[in-house]
Image 1 (cartoon, rainbow, N blue to C red):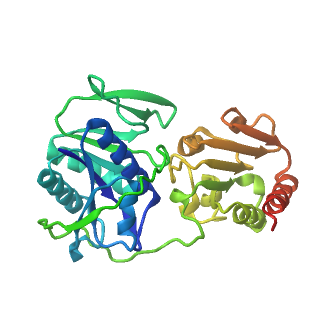
Image 2: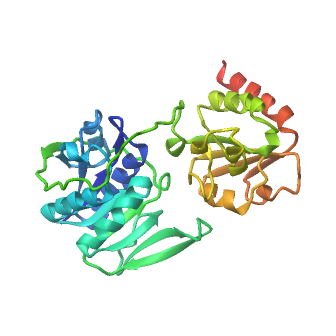
Length: 319
């Protein structure tokens, strides 16, 4: 018996969320008295780094049919690996890839699924996992009674922990089906920091009045080493690209720090950012709904406040 974690990667690099999932799997294995192993489809450059997070063995599948994500094809390979390794728990990150693959793996393994887990399971008696519900407004304790279990861990919900170990990389021979999905074109977004991987996100809304005023948002993001984001009306008005839209109908994020500039805080926006560890709101309207969800709030004109923040951050960093 073991815990198997799916390693997600892009452009040759393992995603931060996978290091979180690996740390989670390793601590779960320790808690249940077993070992943590990993499955990777492809050949990321930093594959050996997974061993530092408590993973003892990495099963690697290399096949050109896995170059593009087809959730059905991936799920069949993951299920084969779980069967071959005797894994009774399979861990994913609850990101876009995990959300597509994990439910299909659960069906193939006849396993109970907990999507959106935020903590290690309570294994005293029943196997109970805490997860987010109602767009992150509440938690639920879910008891999983099946022999096999699939857990999808929310990004940024579990700390990355290095144990200083190493992992053996072994090839895994899997039956890989022909993908039924055909990718005709790929458009990649550009930016210094990937939005879904960012620890800090600086976001702005219609309070900036126009795209020509976005430089101060970018200046603050550059000073903090942050990603930039925006509200839906800003994306709809084409002030910013749609891939920067965060909220219920955009990208859901969970950074350590989320700074909202000139955003009123509609419930749809909050649903996509309320898992942020710390929320700072800057708005000249003291009645803006966002202040109710904020950890810190600044009532003031963004055009006066933000440049002063940039100056203060640079001074603090000695830039």
